[in-house]
Length: 53
Image (cartoon, rainbow, N blue to C red):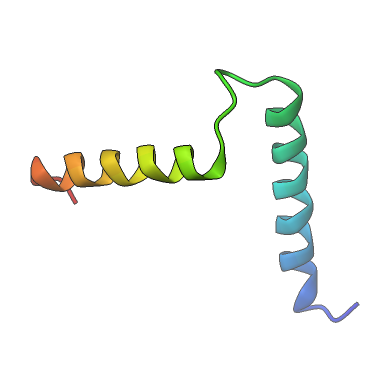
C-alpha cells in the first residue's frame, strides 16, 4: 500500500466501524433516505434563518 493511501484507508475503516455501530444500536426510528434528506434540509434552512453559519 502506498504510504499516502494509508491515512485514507484508516479513515475508511473508522467510518465502516462507526456505521456498523450505528446500525447495531439505532438511536431512533429508521428513516428512508428521502425522509432523512428532507429533515436535514429543513434543519439547514432553520439554522440559516437564525443566522448561524
